[in-house]
Image (tube, rainbow, N blue to C red; front, side, top):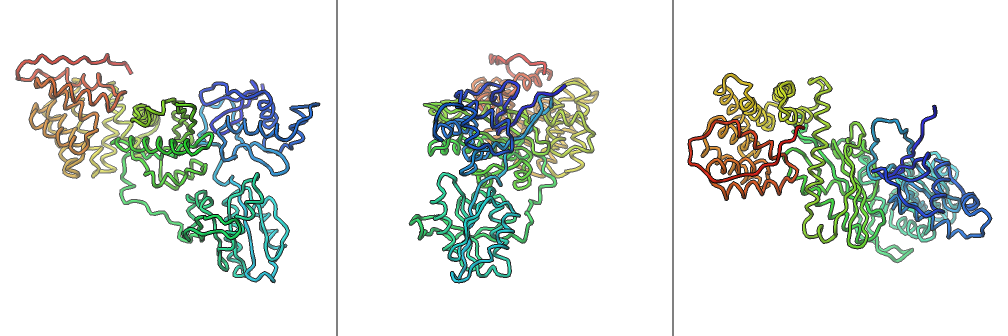
Length: 602
């Protein structure tokens, strides 16, 4: 039986069986009838340029229409796909159009991750202009042309007055060709410029790239800031900022860069990388589905909010905005993002504004497996975002949950010896809180393995202390006093390593309260932890519960409400149940009543 085939187009999928475009949620994306027919024809001719004549003849048949009608349909399709940079639906100047998709089968068990769009940064057209230092000397046109074609040049203009112009479909291919040319035996005779190409503005582009070439010296390659943006994450290119220049050809001010080949090729890694127990996420700047100054600014603001919120999480490392901004104007494969930034997960998406609302399509992808772990469409009011976006907190909570569930599943399905450090940590934390004996004991084994691998990291030691507290609370230990001493041993070793580690301080506070019944000492630990990180939801919750046991109702209410605000999706009922098994403490009675949500079975 023939399987029904779908075509991935960026964040969207074209279902050939239904003959329609679907978004990530599987919902139909509306197109005008003629636009839908044009898209259908392009899908049927994947990877092939369909001429304008073919499209007009098939869609409008006997009607007499101009190219404008087709152009409107192409714009409609690109708008629906969020294809701002024309990387999915490509224009072949004076010829036609071509789709650049990836085919997937409906029976595939996993979704293939596509950060922002299903293309790579190489699919941005660029122009290379070559001028001889001495206009009387013509460049070796034949040799240069052969090399350009072998490196992916689409076309070139005739050599005139010591000048040659080549068009490339890939900006990095254009840059590599220019650098190769500058290092040839005759390279000292060449001045070379590179700029992005816009098919609809060919003549202006020719003048602009010629102006950049005029800035270059002998054997030099000068590129525009737009080219630098596209190649920023390429580790084999180095850029020298030449500052602002006025182009003689167009009389516009541009920022120019001289580009060199990076012969080092070594990425400096931090010393703690081998012992780092936390997963690392990179938030790629959100791209506007329909580019405009307002939408671009809002996309930057949302990305900043997401990064700032994730940065407050103690269980996830987040790549700085200064590094991820390199990908704001390009689309890059997951492998390249992971290799360049050292990230384990990527959060990407698109943004679209309509009236007073913002629509975002977000997806979280795992780099090692190219799986989409979570995807969701979010709609918010512009005023809500500008006044403080609570929806961001929920997004981050869902991201953390998706990562945790993924690592828990991996931890349960593979041998412990093969698991990565952060999988061991996240998996152990998740399994120990499921309170099933098999999962709980496995969590202890995973934490012990992790401590053996990274004995000087406070995170694993802190969670091991909590593991002993849970063991007593569940009635699985015959010697609570011994468990208390073991737990304090782990928490104190964690604090010896890092006296201001919030997780370690909170863990010791939990041990002192639950096992040693030293409430004043426990309160000191919680206070110290919240001085270090006032936004630690778990610390707020546990200190609030301690206040409740002490009869300090207003303080308990304040801390617990703050915990709910900081982590609206936290399973607070589960956290409180830790206290219900502890023997009553000898202290005054209290009228405090806390209404906790019912515990979920999962």
